[in-house]
Amino acid sequence: MAVTYKDRYDYARNADILAAVKISMVKTAIDIQAEDTETASHAARSSFAITVLRDPEHWGAIMSLGVVTQLTTATPGDTELNTIMASIWNAYAVVYTTPAEG
Picture 1 (cartoon, helix red, strand yellow):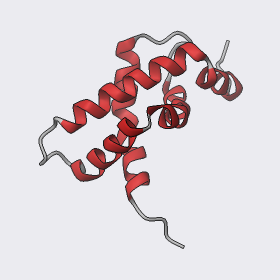
Picture 2 (cartoon, rainbow, N blue to C red):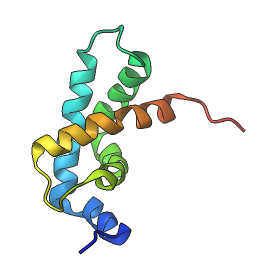
Picture 3 (cartoon, rainbow, N blue to C red):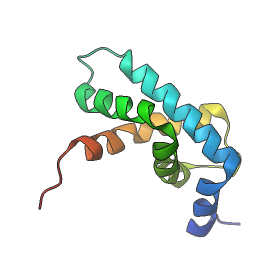
């Protein structure tokens, strides 16, 4: 059976998945604060990491939507969540730190 977008939206609001996403997100933010400053896009990554660390409840709800778009199972393990978080981090960091054009 295929996983629908509605299924993924429900996963993003599932308390267990949401809690795991928040932990993975905070872990990733802490790791980014320790990375080499020469890492590509480090300034944006670091700025976003600080923002995430200041309000993980808010950002967990937002980033859970990005995470569930990449899930391969309805019950992801820690390794899968960490891999997904690392793969989507820059998309959120760049959007967050780049001023909107208007």
